[in-house]
Amino acid sequence: MCGIVGYIGEKRCTPILLHGLKNLEYRGYDSAGIAILENHSIQIQKEKGRVANLESLVNPLCLQGTVGIAHTRWATHGKPSHVNSHPHLDSDSCFAVVHNGIIENYKVLREFLEEEGYTFSSKTDTEVIPNLIHYYYTLQKETSISAFLQAVSSTCQRLEGSYAILAIGKDFPGIEIAVKKDSPLVIGKGNKEFYIASDMPAILEYTRDFYFLEENEMALIEKERIAFFDANLKKHEKLLTSIPFDALSSTKRGYEDFMLKEIYEQPEAIRRTIANRIQFGKPIDFSDISFSKKELTHLHQIYIVACGTAMHAGFVGKQIIEKLCHIPTHVEIASEFRYGSPFLSSHTLCIFVSQSGETADTIAGLRLAKEKGAKTLAISNVIGSSITREADQSIYTYAGPEIAVASTKAYTCQIALLCLFALYLSELRKTEKVEQIEDLKRELFELPEKLEEILQKHELLQNIANQVYQETDMFFLGRGIDYYVALEGSLKLKEISYLHSEAYPAGELKHGPIALIEEGTIVIGILTQDALLSKTISNLQEVITRGAKVIAITMAELPQDLFEFVFKIPTTNSYFSPLLSIVPLQLLSYYVAKEKNLDVDKPRNLAKSVTVE
Ligand code: F6R
Image 1: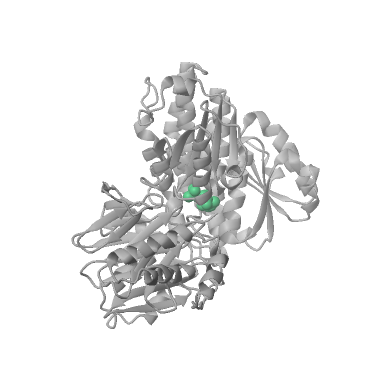
Image 2: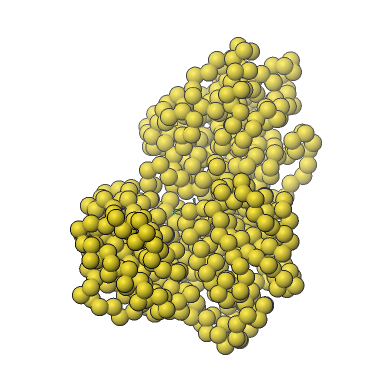
C-alpha cells in the first residue's frame, strides 16, 4: 500500500528518495512521485506506474536539493494517473504533501476550501491537506516556522480518518514536518541528517536509530535537530530506539523471486522463532511475556484477531489451543471484530497476529479489546511495529523481512509460535501430561528438517503446475486442521496466479458447491489427520465420481489409483501438520504463477501492508 520516504540533510536527496521508494515497491502501488525544495520553489516529478518510470523522468543533474519528500501511491480516491499521484500542492504551490491513509471527511473539506477560493486538480482525498495547511498558514499573517507548524496542527484537527503526512513549504528550505494518526511513520537519525519513511526497510541501509511517531504526534525536522510535539503543540522529549535488522535479508540472494527465497527460508525462520524457547525437560520459555501465571491460568477464553494469511495461522492456533489447553478460542477477521460487540473481560486474552504489525483493521481491533478490558498480546514479525507498541505484551516471529506480497515464511512462523504458546499455556494449566508435552516439543523441534525434505521435492510440484496452470477453477478440501490449510492454499493460488479457487471443509461440499464439480475439475485434498482420513477419502471419492481429478497432500499411504497424484509429506504429530502440508501448496501456487508468466512478488491490486481499512 502507499509508501512515504523523506530526507533532510546535506546530501542530494533525489537518489536517496528514489532508492527508498524502490525499497518500498514490494508493498504494492500504482504511481510514484517526488518533491524537492530548490531555490525557494518546490520541484515535483510524478508519474503513473513503476518507480522506474519516475526515475526516467527525473534528471538528477537538475535536482540538487537536499530536502525532499516522495511517495508511492496505491489508489483509493481517484484512479492511478499523473494528476492523482502524490506529492500534492496547494493551489498557490506553497506547500507540498505526501500522505498515506484516507481522509474520510475530504468532501466537506474540499467544499469548504472551494468556497474559500481554493482550486483542485486531482480527485484525491489528499489534496485537501496542502490547501488546508495554506489556509491556516495565511490566517496567521506571519511567515515563521511556528506558523507552519501551527498550520499543520490546525489542519490535522480538521481531518477525520487515518494519515501519515510529510509536508514541506517553499519558504522553509531547511524544514520538514511529519505527523501521523493510525498510519505508521518512522524517522531515522543519521549524521546531520534525518530519513523519514512509512516503513523501516525503505531507509534501513542508512541508519538503525529510529524515532517512532505515536498517535497525533508531530515532528519538526531540521538537518541537525528534531523536536516533537503533541496534538496541542506541547513540546516533549522522545527516545531514540536502535533496531537490530538484517538489511541483507531484503535481497533475493540468488533466488529468482523473493517469494521463492522466502519459501526456502522457512526451515531456518522456524528454527529462529522457536529455538530459544524450547529446552527439553524444562518449561517453555515465554519469560518475555509478563502476564502472571495466575492471569494465564484464569483465562476464560481467547480471541485471535487478524486478517488474511495471519488469520489462517490463527485458525490453526485455535485448534491447538483448544485441544491442548482446553480454553475456548475464537478466531475473528479483524475488519469484522473491530465493529462487533465481542464479550471481553479481564479474563479474556486477545491475540493479534500480524506480520507487518501495521494492518489498520488489526490495530483497530486491538484498541477495541483494550477499551473493553481484555489482555492483549501481539504476534508480529516487525520489532517496533505499531501493533507491538500498543499491545500489553508482544512476542515475535523471527522470519526476517518478508518482501513478497504473498506471505509464506511469516505464516509458518506464526503457526510455530502459536503452537509453542499453546504448549506453554498447557504446561501452566497442567492440561496435558508432562511426557506428552515433552514429545510435542521434540516433534516441533524436528519440523524444520522435515520441511527441508519437502523443499527437495519441488520438481514434482513444478510438474503438477505445468499440467494445471491453464485451469480456471480449483477446489481445496480438508477436514479439521486440514481445512484451515486448504483456506491458505487457496488464498495463495488466487493471490499470485489469479486462478479462481475455493476452499471447503470436505464434508460441506455436498451441501451446494459440489454442483460446480465437472469432468476434469482439479481438486486438491489435504489429508493429514488420521482420525478423519477415511471421512475425507469418502468425500474425495464423491468428487472423483463426478469427474474431478484429485491431487492428495498426505502423510498416509493412500491408494495411488484413486488419485491423479499423491504428494507425500513426512509424518509429524497431527497438531503440527499445517507447518508441512502448506509448503507443497505454496510451491504449487508459485510454479503456476511462473507458468503464467506473472509477477510473483508483486501481484496486481495487492499491497504488502494494508494500512487503510
Ligand atoms: C496474503 C497476505 C495477507 C496478509 C494480511 C495481513 O498472502 O499476506 O493476507 O496476511 O494482509 O497482513 P499482516 O499479517 O501484515 O497483518
